[in-house]
Every structure is written in structure tokens, then in C-alpha cells.
Length: 194
Image 1 (cartoon, rainbow, N blue to C red):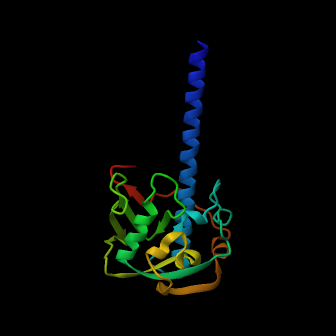
Image 2 (image 1 turned 90 degrees about the horizontal axis):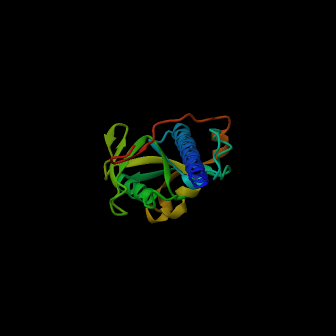
Image 3 (image 1 turned 120 degrees about the vertical axis):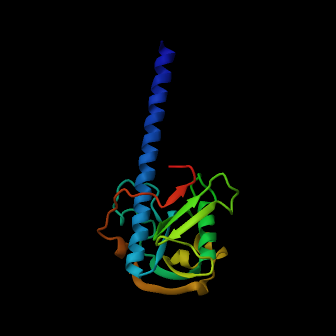
């Protein structure tokens, strides 16, 4: 009887931990995506990347400013081909489902991926403004300046010369000030997943 009670308590605790982790992931996704939306709005770019590394580890609320890891980093716009964007997305999803500081929260696009595919060929579809990503088209992509300069290993995807503009004095903190996020549909969609 005591063993059964202990097993029940462990199962209940495990369920609570799982629910807490799922809630934290939902909040983090909403915050990251909203930050990316703010970058698009501020820059006029078609799409934006917000790397996971730029969010505080303990994102507990939807307060965008409080969630910033590097508040003084400036906003940049980089010109990338569709091929480079796909390579960046492959890098972002390369460690999934494990945490990855190079994971990207997105704005202006949705990505379908297959976790069971080999690393480097997990992205199965990319849609930007309801159109398929074109390998040869050039897109303006907003992102934090550290990432634009190749941080988090993105130097393997593009060079610093791809930077079109750094908005000097326009910090992430100034952009996120007073803004909050709401739960939103995930922009990364797993084949056969939720």
C-alpha cells in the first residue's frame, strides 16, 4: 500500500513537472515570436529572426523587455537569399528536440520540419507571406546585430557584408519596452506533430 502511494505521488509530480515545462515552452515561444514581430515592424523587413540565446533562461511572463538577455544589442537588417535562409533554419533546428541557443523564433514566415530526417535536411517547407521560399530571391531579414555579424555560428551561413543596415541607437530594449506577448500559433510546425 505504501509503495503504491509513493508511485502515485511520483506519477503526479512527474505530470506536474511536464505541465510546467510545457507552459514555460508556450510562454517562451510566444515571447520569442512577439519579439521577432517587433523587429519586423521596427525595420520594415519582410521577416525576422530572434535567436533563443537572446531570451533570458527563466522567461516567466510575457513581458518582452524583462525577457531580454542582451538589451543593449542594436537592430540590424541583413539581405539573404532564400538558400541562405533555409541554411539558417536548418542550423536553428539541428539540435531539436534538445535546447539550442541558435534556435530561431520567426516573424513573417512558417517552417515545416521533419525531426526524423537527417540533420541538414530537416526543413521540408518554408512559407513567407503565403508564398513558398525562393532559393534565388533576396529577402530583407531583421535580427539582433550580434547575430547579423555571424554570432551563434551563423557566420557559416552569411558574411558580415550581407548586413544592409545597423540601426544605431535602436536597441532591443528600446523596441521591447512596455510590450507583452500573447499565446500564438507556433511558426515551426513538425511534420505529423502538433
